[in-house]
Length: 53
Image 1 (cartoon, one colour):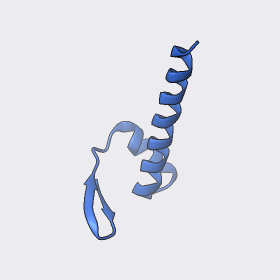
Image 2 (cartoon, one colour; image 1 turned 45 degrees about the vertical axis):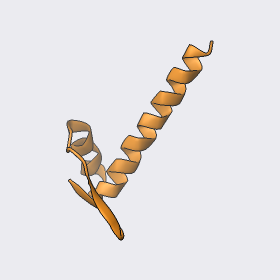
Image 3 (cartoon, helix red, strand yellow; image 1 turned 90 degrees about the vertical axis):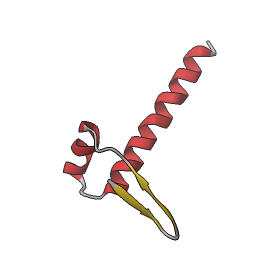
Image 4 (tube, helix red, strand yellow; image 1 turned 30 degrees about the vertical axis):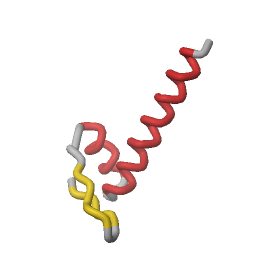
């Protein structure tokens, strides 16, 4: 997938099964990337919290 970034260079993302599943709910590639990035951020925070215990 090619994601336009205004005047900056476009970003390219491989369309995985998760990406496809998310875009079945909402066709926007930008929405799917936001959901994926949020999930990655939550996972990273949970792992950091577990390591600090």
